[in-house]
Image (tube, rainbow over all chains, first blue to last red; front, side, top):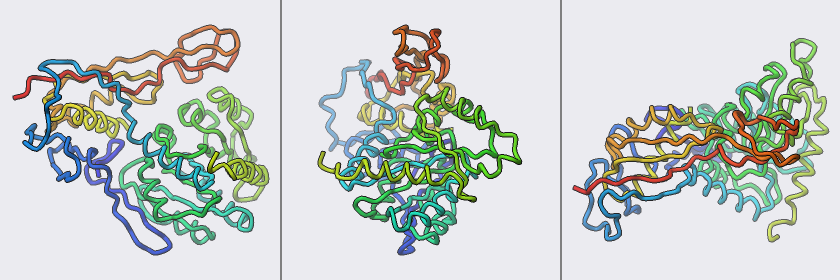
Length: 291
Length: 112
């Protein structure tokens, strides 16, 4: 596949099924295979593709091509492809009454630790399935599995965010139950994941108090795209210069509707409010498949 | 840092639409609040276009200012950032423009 986000040609997305140990190298859609170095691929099922050297084949039909020099209005959304994959995922979730959440944060804010704790604490309550996104390693996927949830690890290679087709491929392996909760842990990055809809019901941005309270202002796209901001690691508040009030005010400045939850995945403080939110959201998608 | 991937999407979409005809010019609409840097797309474009129907094509990027309408007083105002607020003090507004990320048109050359 082609790289994303300033990466080179070596980028390769893999999906690791942690139940079976099977690793799948993901083939992305053919028209994304336009390589800058002129490398061409054989696209057996795409009869409209353009060859790098500009040649056309006789079996292609060009009867309707525009006259010479004509300006062709395209009005095409650049991210249309990801959006269509995201809608497919969204319908898939809806049909199975699955609550899908997209967890985003900078690296090290505590996404995986929060998931581990949530899986352990809600074991008898909600069925949780996890798609783990990282550039490399199955470390987080293994942590999730050890905590007791089925997980699929998506490694994006050099890509810095998950895209909707990767999630779709992950779901094919994960096969989450009807009425379950699917947590999609995105690649740790507060920039690109804001732009890529995965078909989730909500984005949850996690900000740890070891970071700056101005993060919402520095990365407004992410905090605006999120429905919930979790302030994590509040057990560290006595040791850091983090102004909770200012952080919340900054988040609300960017996104007046954002729900704020304060907790520590380590000490357990504040987790009840998070679990309450999860149960309510899972409840709202129940019995909605055919509505 | 996602502009290279986005530029690849642009070249792929236009390349498909051109159906093998060489492309002379591509016109984009990029909102200033879209989260995408026009300069970075322009920087990537020539490299990504190499070896495709878009090789040598010029790239025109129309940047679109952010505008919003205040939910409280109805005033329309320019928004330089995602969180610019209305002069009336209300933070509730509806974005009117500035988040576009579209391929507006392409200009095709004579097929050889």
